[in-house]
Image 1 (cartoon, helix red, strand yellow):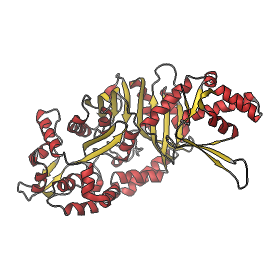
Image 2 (cartoon, helix red, strand yellow):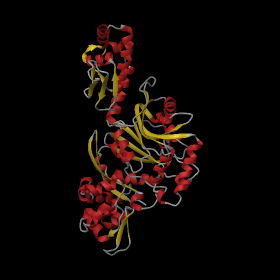
Image 3 (cartoon, rainbow, N blue to C red):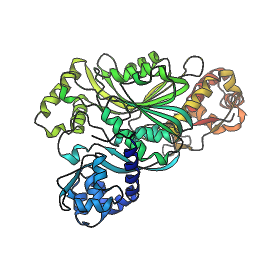
Length: 514
């Protein structure tokens, strides 16, 4: 049980802990462990790191790593030397450790994972400490149902994809240990984190208090409850969420965990969020969250997700990054919870496969959902795409640019586009491929260096049009000149190139000068 962070005594202990952790950083841990042990930890192999810390019995940093990162027991006197300000009694009072006795040589072990976290985003570098539950790698056993997840691949992905710009109110739905709320506090005035898990909210509040000095001026607030219920009737400029989107068989209670299971059938939780999050978005407000969705024999994933976007009444952009067949998906989440270590793993596996078969599921997609409430009028962005290769999910700056480009296109009809002046984006290059001995190219490719890394195959007319987009000649005049040069029908070429220009503008290969 963790302490109540609103209690003055807890606040005092957190201050002392922060003092003791000053040298406990990502860089110092990496220097201690070295590249081999660090890489092994990334593969969920702890032995190399355990060997390293055993070689430094008198090093305070090694004691912190052993206890709080690796879940090892150490003699009380070793850990006490690493935390002289808060002391072992203070750590125990915060609920971070338990001791086997009162002698200096008695073993001490951590009850919670405590580790440094470092990131660089659009706002620059940030260094925090985060408390969560130990993973199954550290404990060697399946997770508890009320497990509070630490920083993982999904939370890092969401943090990188989230828009970072000054804003007012942010909702972190399903805050977990509070990592997304900390990121949001760097650019928001007021951050509300919600979670159905009481343990998650307690840990998140301690994490916010532990790192409050790094996000001055922001207000944190934690609220218990499911999905949007805790904030019904309120409006937010940004909603971020790594929600409990895992598709779980409802017939097997052992498959459920608070941090990943929303209690709904199939992908209904993601559908519900897409269709309902608009009720808490201020005009112009954006929601970004990760999710899973099913592809079924009678309904492909693109049709399925597109129908949810239509029902939302919001601008919508969905990017699918991964696709797993039902067996792969079941294996992933059984392993994620450590249940592959238990005797009932085969029963869980069978239950997942049976659940998918009951709905005719061919596979499950994973990706990022971006939604926006229009400031006025009807939504005009409806985009569902797949990026199985290349840069992957869009980072925050790409999300912002995509929304801005879509707004520009919506405000310019064909006549306005003909009068506009365009230029080639600075990261775009052209490739020409010739057959041996041929004078003219057989293939012309326009390649985007940044963004989504898109590659567009262009015909002679489109290549000529893009090459002439220098930012000082109206589109209409360029098309008329090309029609004359190529000796083709001007109206037909205008229709073709206006459509192509809109696609290139949408994807960021062309840019307007206005």
